[in-house]
Image (tube, rainbow, N blue to C red; front, side, top):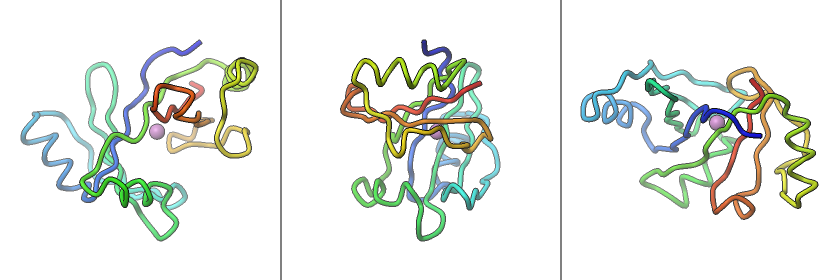
Length: 134
Ligand code: CO
């Protein structure tokens, strides 16, 4: 069902400092920070040959990643995103097997303007999983 790893998201307290670590220490190609108000994050994309890393800093008072940062003040891995061809078919197959979808279970338009869903970490080895239809 799942296809490529689309991205790994890492929540950080300071996205510029995190971008410098990836650029200067790890020698990766990084984007400029972009604030996505509807999604409550400022993001830097780390472009790798086979996938992306998204460095996320909370943006605005209602940021969905602010609680995570309070629990992990130094930052940490937040979720992995796998690509699927048909997100409704994937959801129905997963829920039929007992997996829990977060929220109301309906896909939302994600930060890449594509439909996304999040799956409960307790059902997936302790890791928050995002599915993105590509
Ligand atoms: Co994501």
